[in-house]
Length: 89
Image 1 (tube, one colour):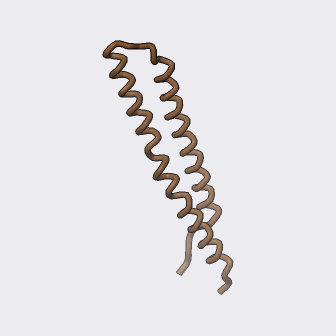
Image 2 (image 1 turned 45 degrees about the vertical axis):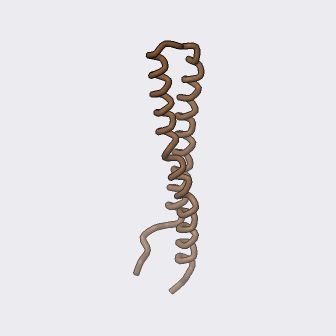
Image 3 (image 1 turned 60 degrees about the vertical axis):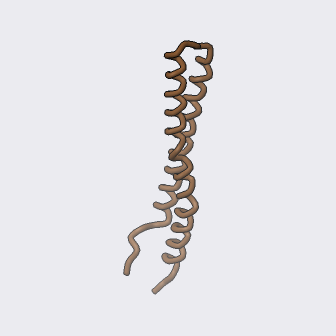
């Protein structure tokens, strides 16, 4: 049985996921900053706008937790591939 994957490829994917997490966190923080900069708006339409933007910020940050949970598993997979590839048959 052959394993058609490399630990380096897994680690590259891990780095891509870390970058994606940073990007999503920056997007969410940017939306929150935008909401705060418009906090002096005080009519009913602005209240709906703030609520909608807050929901968008939460939705953009939500995948970060799931992606962070994947990172240790990917590292374990890369380690297992390193171990497998170091064995000579």
